Image 1 (cartoon, rainbow, N blue to C red):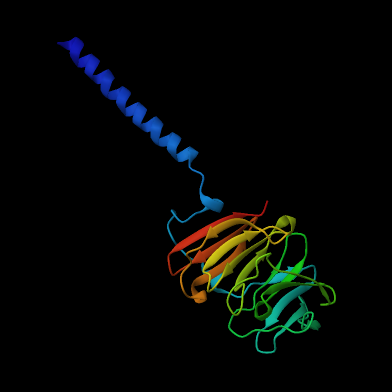
Image 2 (cartoon, rainbow, N blue to C red):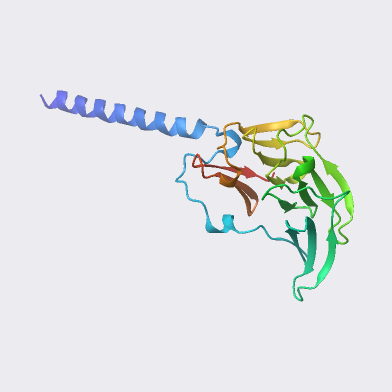
Length: 213
């Protein structure tokens, strides 16, 4: 009788161990899309609701949506160093006028009315170049959120098409993070956190984490 009890105990322990091993393996083999973190507890950081601050050396770069300009200020004195209207002028029909500084010091601004990104010289504000996807952004004005990644890539959030995407320098999409964002651009948030870029959609309560490298 003791023999059967012992065998039964070993059987239960074996089944439990196999189940635990299978669970661990499934978790370790799961490869989330673009480092999708949507399964985590959804909490939008308070810092994400603030206007992005781009700084390089002694300069801080800001957008003026009402005047449709990009400005550089001295960090210590708050003195205006330069003001830029881009290549021709920035068309800003709505609330979105995003700006970003890449890890290599490239200053990019979204000219959403022209549906492209424009690179400015951080020292002078002079226009350098523009970038847009191979298949142009849809809608009247996009991208409403973006970040300049390493290697000349860009991550964008687009209204209308409701898409979040990582693009190659060539303009071809590298990864479609989501094609089902919520209807309103006011639900979209994007900000840097160390070596990652975080995307939040408060409408569908999801977020994604994109590695710079």
